[in-house]
Image 1 (cartoon, rainbow, N blue to C red):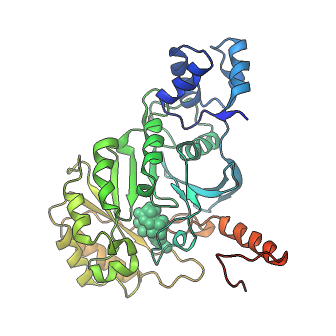
Image 2 (cartoon, rainbow, N blue to C red):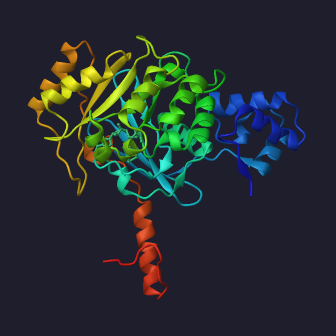
Image 3 (cartoon, rainbow, N blue to C red):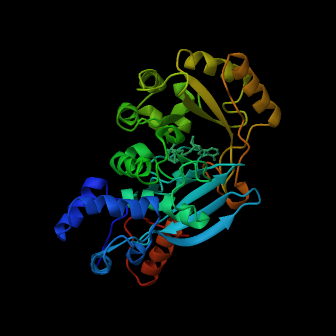
Length: 372
Ligand code: SAH
Ligand code: SF4
């Protein structure tokens, strides 16, 4: 079966082409077609001979992940449920703003972590996404807006946030490869300053993000004490707040122009008191930081509620008074379950239906002792 070229870094692409007898400069030409022009078909690569195009077509594909479904929010947010070649699925969300927009990219199918307020955390991890599947999410969105060739000035798909499903730092190698492709100046060319990676706090990997990729960092903090963070963000039991903030203090490239974003989900009566806000400002002191206060986005069966407007306003004011930028984000795409923490693919449902079929056929399921 032909293999995909999407997601191969330059050197790998050159190797594949060398294996079919092509010289090194071909990789550069083809790179340009794929990532600058957005070619979806070798036939359109008119700077290559017809014979070579046919050859490429026989050996390789430029296929994107299949679009399982697409939803549009009243506020313009778009969500795609993508299906990969093995049938697994993940979601990608585009959040347009006036003259630009951010694509929220997933790094895994589901998530191994189980943050209490996050819908994705209730879905068991199926697997890491490959570099090609991560780049593929971007290509699908670009195709949808027809934004090819890759604009050099203003662009609608201007920013990327790694804030979709999954913990990106549990899939570092594939995320890094995908970002190197996306940042490459001869292709999509999104600058590292327009890319933000959000982590729940995988401390040992944080330094590498700054040193090797240089993208912006966001930390899902959500609590000011280990006692509460242990419950909300269970990875805290392994890497407590102290260690997490130490990694932020030494994050390569963080300065006042490139601040670290601290994400803080507003949970009614849990982490939203004025005392919490003051403790938060004290905790972060000395780190070039800004806050992203996220109103809790509900999902079926969620154990929390969103803070009141009044509590959120007061919380933001205290951080502002302490000298921090702390915008209260208006949730986007809530009506299509596309807002932060609402993503969850149908993979689990698929698994359940398969399991039911097995049970009906009398085959025991070792993972799930009971199904209601
Ligand atoms: N796994 C990574 C990135 C994806 S989540 C991480 O945890 O950082 C993106 C952001 O949405 C995180 O800050 C996450 O904590 C937050 N989030 C998760 N569930 C949410 C919900 N129901 N409402 C609001 N924000 C949520
Ligand atoms: Fe995973 Fe992030 Fe959700 Fe936590 S908040 S369960 S790390 S996706």
